[in-house]
Length: 112
Length: 114
Image 1 (cartoon, rainbow over the protein chains, first blue to last red):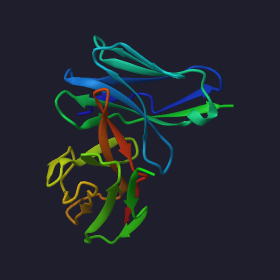
Image 2: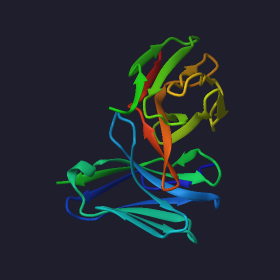
Image 3: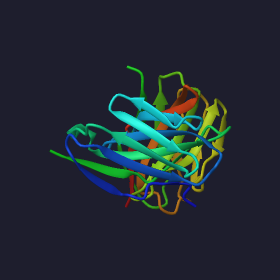
Image 4: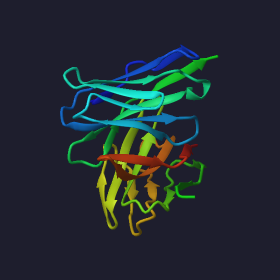
């Protein structure tokens, strides 16, 4: 049972344009959501997070939006740069539990 | 430099053998985790530990064992009971950043069963 879903396995975006990565979840008890970026043969690195009491969090070129009623979050990267090419995972934390549940990832390719 | 060190980076195992993957952190984090990555399946939690001498099963603990005798170390043993052990294994530790437990990951260990 996949509680966190990333339905797009891959996405290609022109350099300088906006990249939008999507994530859906089913568990209403999730209270924090995080995005991680992963290069091949490396561990994921933390990008940005959002609490369930907020609907937007921004950090430089990265913005995460949360729509609780739709159980949907998205990561916006603008402008997209070649170094953004990587696999992006969304993750969610169950309230009162320290473990994270990860989505299956979306491979983002930025086209120069 | 603070971080997480996983070893070995690559490991080959014959069927029926147990292998142990090492994970050491010098971040002074209390919690540590083991995840497994398979193509198309994201990261799945094997075991986690929130404090020394205590650990909990994750979503796919069968065929694996762990220990947490020291705060900085959380080795994972892949036993012969694990039916499909070939995968990329990631160790992580966590702190809280504004309430969210942000995981710091190691570089991973790739296990291949021959």
